[in-house]
Structures are given as C-alpha cells and as structure tokens.
Image (cartoon, rainbow, N blue to C red; front, side, top):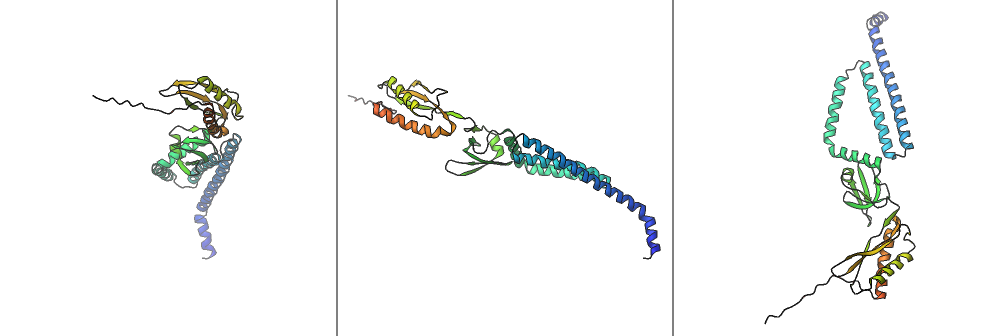
Length: 274
C-alpha cells in the first residue's frame, strides 16, 4: 500500500476513527472517575463504621458492596457513551440477579441474619449462649454461620437464619448472675436452724455478693418436704464453681446438724380380706 492509498484511507475513515477514539477515551475517563468516586465514598463509609466500633467483617463487606454499586452506576453510562447498547446488558444483569437470588434463598437468609447478628450484637465471641437449639461458647460469627464450642469441646456450626429465628439466651452478657437452689428438708427438721445454716454458708463464701442481698426463704410446703430457696448473687464467671461448692457445703452442713433431706416416699397399705 503506497502513501496515496494511505492518504485516501485517512481521508475516508479518519474522522470516524477520531470520533470513535474520543468516545472510547471519554468512556475510559468516566470509568476512571467512577472508580475514584466509588473508592472514595466506600472509604469514607468504612472509616465511619470503624469509628463506631462496627464489626470488621461487616465493615469490609459494606465497603465492598458500596464500591461495587457505585462503580457499576458509573460504568453503565460510560459504556453508553462509548456507543454500546446498555439496555440489554442491564436486562441480562437483572435476570442473572433474579436467578441467583432464587437459587440462593437459604444462603441469602443466612447472610441477612448474619448482618443483623453483627450489627445488633445479641452475643459476641467468648459469650456462653443458648442459640439455635444449642449451647456453647461463641467461637466466631461470620456472615453465614455462627460457631459454638460446647462444654466438652465440640464445634457446632449453626446457620445464622436458625440463630435469629429463635430466642438467644446470653449467659455472659450481664456482670452478675443469681444462683437458684431449692433445698428440701423434712417436716420434722428445725426450719429456723436450716435457714440459719444457709445464711452462714452464704456469708462465708467470699465469691457471693453482698449487694444484691441473698434471698433465703420458705418456697413451698411440698408433699414430703419443706422446700427452702437459697438465691445468692455472684459474678458471672463464678456462677458454676460457686453453685457446685455451695451445693456440697449445704449437704455437709445439714448432715452435721442432723437435718434430713427427704426423698419422695409412698406408703403402701395392705388390707387382709377375711
């Protein structure tokens, strides 16, 4: 191809190629500006969430989600500026999103529940909870599942939708807990002496809090025993050690004082027919 032919091609296609080049350059510029704006806005949102102490997992996810949405909003006009028909692209993305949403209903439910768990924090890592029909220490909370460690060190992975669909009992949320003990004594025992023994045991244990004051009272007159309640308050971390020790001390002290702890009995009477 000689120079004359090249000149003719430039004269024929040059203006059109220049126009296309300008469109492409403009589209690239719009994409770059959209990228910068999306990154800037998502960075601001992540910084604001971090300052408010929101979980890092949720912060990063929200930041990426905002970036993706803003970048897509900027890329679609850029494609249109470059001469690409975006209506079909938008329709295809919408159809794909609907199909994915229908296919991942369970996963999306777990994800939504995970966002709520992380945002509202009914429990946190290290808490002992009843959740999703299981009990254990929270090991981790992700966007799709919550992992508990049981007392005998088994790992339970619970879908977040199951966690949020039922009540969550958090035993570690408050700084103190109340021990509820019911102690039955025989009707022949000295009730006043039994209450004094319980009071002394409660006062002798340094783990038991003075405020709120422990409650020691007669709860009910049962079929075979007088049932006393002993309700001291302890720090949450001391709940089980104190409960176990107090139960043992009550049995030992009542045995030493001769106070019987009865068990259900049944009297059977035989009548001889003549």
